[in-house]
Amino acid sequence: MARSNMLFTADRTVPGLIVKIGNYPLHHGGVGAIRSLGRLGVPMYAVTEDRWTPAAHSRYLERAFVWPTTGTEEPGRLVEGLLRIGRRIGRPTVLIPTDEEAAVLIAEHQEELADRFLFPRVAPDLPRRLASKQGLHELCVQHGVPSPAAAFPESYAEIEDFAAHARFPVVAKNREAFVRRKRPAVGGTTRIEDAGHLLALAPRWGEQPGVILQEYLPREQAEDWIVHAYFDGSSDPLALFTGVKVRSWPPHAGMTANAYVVDNPELAQLAAQFIKRIGYTGIVDLDLRFDRRDRQYKLLDFNPRMGAQFRLFENESGIDVVRAQHLHLTGRKVPEGEQRAGHRYVVENIDLPALLAYRRSGYTTPHAPARASGTELAWLAADDVKPFFTMMARFVRPGAQHLYRLWRSSRRGSAPAK
Image (tube, rainbow, N blue to C red; front, side, top):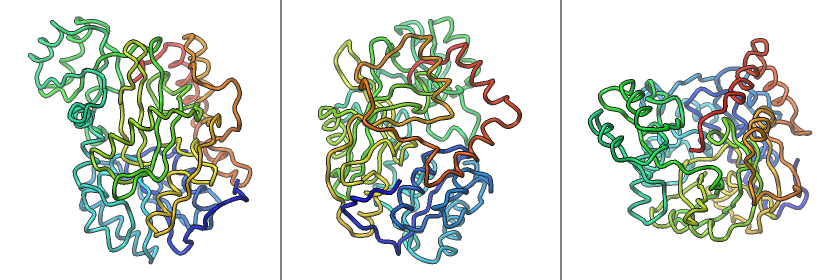
């Protein structure tokens, strides 16, 4: 709901546009961004897969531009599509990407897009490097930021050599971010138990494997943390938040299903220092794993865009990262304030199966508060109910097959944390 104690006023003459390239209609992050700025009176627009995307039914959306992209299109075609939407809106508009493809497209085509849109200016090649598992690992090594040990085999022979010397289990992931553009080597984070398992899987990956083989951080010895922030042109944080992930879906490996805001100054400093060193500007969504064995926070993922669970985080002045970006890009001051520690975020359609899976595994998060100071639901909002019901209609269609697949996956267990 809108807050009555806002310490700022947004520029209502500058709209926002939710930009997505991949096909994932049940995206609560986009709905959250529409509500966050829409409640301030900012006109909101969104790229959607079809008319029945939940975001298209938000009361705060001025218009949905139905544009079912897949990530296989040529960049020039995507840029022209964005410019066409910009012409229809008819005034400078803040771009809010919700996936890596969109964030990279904007960064690599800043000059073409600058006349129609507002967005943080960043080194054109940096978002692609950060979204790549290999690029991120190399930046972590370069700047002394802990990350899981990793190998990037270029052939089956190199995989055989790795298998002969590696300590198992290990985790296999796709090396590059944009696996939707071609058939991915692995279907997500995959735990590999031993050398025989690895050598049995590797022939499926082709002559150029395209995978990262990464140290496995055992969940019983680790905690999942998240950082969301917005950085200005000098790579200084105008808003920075820390929290702990309680549950994800798939279990221990997927998107956040349940999380809490938890103050962590050490983690905040680590994130701010790294982003300052690499010179990044804009919104970030970071996933880190605290390894109790060596007491280090290890950076797993750097998403150079808004995270789906960003509405978990808001400071006492009413600022979240999307509001911070809009205020900053429209020349307004971003009010400071403490984060609302103890606040909880729940994604209704995936938290129940995640809860069942986590209870079976016995995993708990030590830093999660015993009781939430408040709860933000991803889908259901008293002032904007249609996205929730649209989500439910799509979630259970056709029949109960989607719910059944979730249940079966939780029964079997799934890949460990990324």
